[in-house]
Length: 333
Image 1: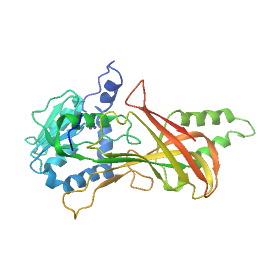
Image 2: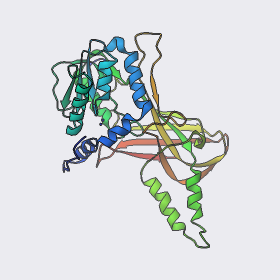
Image 3: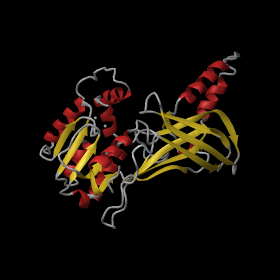
């Protein structure tokens, strides 16, 4: 990269410092990290990427942003052969857990846990590699990528490696037949018109993006690329505060479009050995399920769609003014 301008023993401590404090408190819960550690596609992709990039990690210095339980730091030390790993973790309880796990695995001499926000800590040296599991629902939820980009600009050596190194958001129109039948059922329930309950149910689904495990059979059209963040080494801080995606689809079958499903994949770069393929973490419908699942933005209607019909929409992702950790997503059709 050219230099440019996560898993606690103690209960979270309530504070009134706003969204950031709430965010870090939520990640001081061990249950959250147990969920992520149990996500085999997630952990497996990072383990595979570290092994694939051993030639770039061995004997070098690694920074793990948002280390949580320290799993990525431990993998970088054990399988990547890193000389030193700085595991930066802002949640105090999880920082203690990471230290304990490094010692338990005989890696305390390699993995140094640094407690604090990456924007506020100081390291004794620049690093050769930055590794981080920063992805949220629909890729950018929680805005942790901004912290990783800050770390890149401040601590990564020129020509250094970022894992992951690329990220893309995909979109596809989906139906929701279970929800549609439920809502329609309120129109005549035991001879009674209960349709306002159905209206409330639909409005509840539209109020905010819904995290669901979307079966591939719900897709009405092939997915399209909605956003490509490109080479994360070249991505500038602030680039993801707002972005707009114009997407076009062609329906493969008839159905009733209920919303737009969103998901992502991240790539870990081509290893130095050309014989090794790039590792890809794929969260699409039909791929092995992850804790991210998929995200559906409901339209508020069930629009009839014919096979071969062209569909288009404009998706706007904008960080919330009230809570920059969250995004307001709008769909215009």
